[in-house]
Image (cartoon, rainbow, N blue to C red; front, side, top):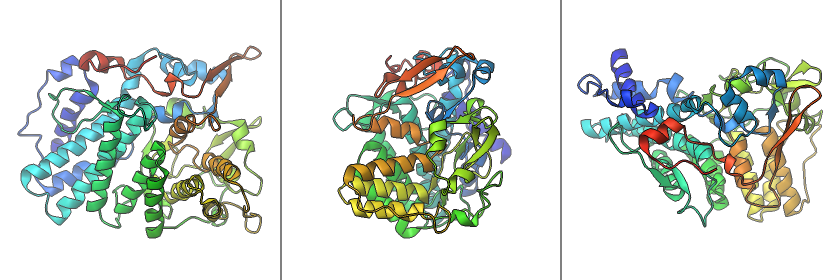
Length: 457
């Protein structure tokens, strides 16, 4: 079985890395063809790949952190350029990991989907469950890739904007083409919606998807698209099935890791990424000062999320992954409360939205110190929800996507700024709302091999 899995994964990597020498190598199909439900299950249960290989670029450009000049100077040129929002980062081959790791998992999902159909095992109870998991994995990875390599979804431009390559088979010989943005999101939604029909209501392992996780992913996708009606529908489905929140008063918020993975009732699906650690590990990254100062002293997140480094610098420690990673890429109920609150406010159900936000915040504050919000107008309520969203969702893979969608509205648009340079001689670097740099360049070797269109600059 180990040899089988390695052979399959090697064949998958042939597409992902896009090198001519690799493409000339043909795997031994007889040795690399999974045949049983146990084979398919083993592929999807490879947690070190399936659940931990999300693109780090989705966090590396955000305004939630900064690094000092000496740390920056010790990084390679690609990371230096990404941090300063350079239009064309040097040493693009390093970008391959952010691209290829996601496509590796997409290809694994395709191997499983094709194998279930080929062997006739798809209609079995376990076959349906495995198919649902494969579709979920493919849809969620397509979504994260779209956040990195495609522009924000705009209803009037979705058919003209470029999406990502939608690899729907495991064949390395299929021509790689970029879909439109509309086709990309249609496929993401189709995969996740069908997975919700096939997945069970619960699972023994957080690394396996459920119908609740699929609905949470759909709420996340629709929110990124600005479809607040549909995002609300799926957020409410999630919270009807699992409204659980942690009371932070029950945690040791001063612990180095206040959120052990086991026993966290908020986690719906576990996923994480370490691929941005070159910038984001706690020894290097400092929490944005204004972001840290936005937490009141009675807010337990101020202690649960941050660790003092000295000199008024803080690192982030509040990972829902159970240990330090670049970011937690999974799904949790707190995000659904925020999705629901924002959607309700935007849909003119302001009091309901504020009440939903209060339900979340009361679990984050010291007992007896939280004063529920009330009697807010729509714009004030929306500003509050968005402020709390940023605070709650630090290092959760959402900030880049949120910036892109919020920048479409001039009243919510944000210009990001970094003051950076050697001591006494800092320069100012900015990225304006809707800048082309919000869409990262596809690795150049992928462009050269596949001839697909590069993102504009």
